[in-house]
Length: 335
Image (tube, rainbow, N blue to C red; front, side):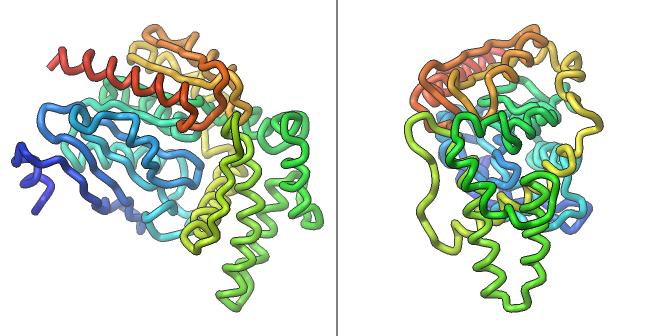
C-alpha cells in the first residue's frame, strides 16, 4: 500500500519506513509515525552529528495529534552509503529536510530537535522560513567554534569531568595532531588502512567507544548514558558518531562563517519558537539558548532546574510534552 493510499484510510495510524533519493548517491532513511488525518506534521531532526532516529524524541508527541517524520542523516543509521565525505555537509542536510517536506507534500511543518538537531533545524528555518510553522528546540547548539572548543579543548567541559576527559585524550595521545579531534581523525585514517576487515572493525569500534564515552558522560545530571551494550549494532552506531563528528567539527560544521546562526536570526525572528534547556547542561551551554531567545520576537525559553542535556531528563521531557500540546492547540485552531 502506497503512502497516499494509507493516508486515505482514516482508521490507519501510520508506522512506515521509506528511503528518499537525492541527486547524489546518498539515500535517506525516513520513518513516518502518527495520524495522517487532520494532524500536525512534525519533522524530527536527530542529534550528533552521527546519531540516528530516536524513540525518545518520537515520544515527545501524541501520535493521535501529530504526524511525525524522522530521518537518519547522511551516513547515519540506516541511510547509506556509510562513511562518505562527499556531498555530506550541512547544506545538503538542510536540503534533505526540504526533500522530505516535498516528498510527503507537506505545507508548513513543525521542526523539532535537540543539540546538533537544533543546528540543522535553525539552518533550515533560516533558508526556508516560509515552510516552518513552529520551532521546538532542546539543548541549543549553535555550532560556533567556541562551542566545539568548549567540548573538545581544555578549560571547557573538561573542567566538570576531568577524569573522563583524561580517558578521552589518553586513547590518542601518541597520534600526531594539534588537538584531540585531529588526533582521533589521524587514528581513523590509519585504521581505515587495516586490510583485515575483522581487525579493522575491532580497532575502529574500540576507538569509537573511547570517543563516544566522552560526550555520553556529559548528557545526564544523574548517571552517565554510556552504553555497555557491545553488540555489533551498537559498535556500528558509535563508529557512525565518531566519523560524522570528526567530519563536521574539523570543518567548522560547513557553515559559511562563524556565528552564522545568530547573525541570521533576523530571518526567523517571527517564527514561533519554544526552547527547553537544562540549567545544568554541560554538553551544550545554556548561554547559547539565552542568546538565541533574545534575538527572537516570538520565543518561549524554559530553563529546567536540576536537569542537564538529555531528552530523557524528567523535567526536560515533561516541558517538551507541555510545549508540544501548546503547539498543537495553537496550530489546530488555525486550520
